[in-house]
Image (cartoon, rainbow, N blue to C red; front, side, top):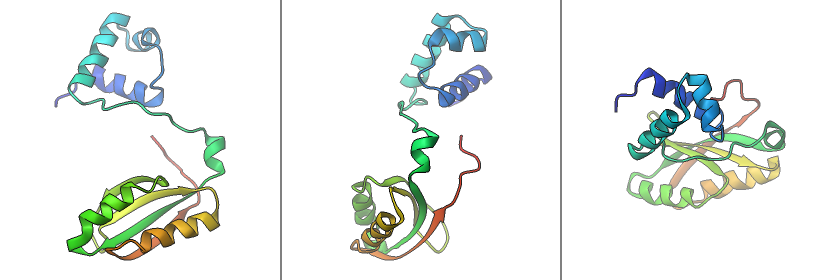
Length: 143
C-alpha cells in the first residue's frame, strides 16, 4: 500500500494524538478540514488505520511494573500457547520472534509480587517449555 508523504505526516500526527480535531490536523498539514477527513476515511477503508486506542499517562504507567517475557513453546502446542496467552489481560503485546525463543510478551503488573505470579502463570501453561524474563527499568523512546 503506497502512502504519500502527506498521509505519512497525518499518520504521525494521529499517532501522537488520535483525538486531535480534524481542523487542527488540517492547519498542521496545510490542508482543509474536508481534505483531511477524506484522507482519514480513505486510510481507514484501506486498513492502514486499524483503530484508535487510549494511551495511558506517564503517571499511571509509573506505578506499573513492566517486563519482557521470552517464551519457548513446544512446536505442536504453539498455537494453543498463543491462544492461552491472548486470554491473559496483563499481556500488552505478543510477538513471534526468531532465535532461541519463539515469542516475546510485554507484560504489565501493579507490583513485583503480581509480576512474579504472572510469569509463573505463563510458565505453567501447557505447551510452554521455558521462559526468561527481564524487568523494564525505564523506557527511553516510545513512539
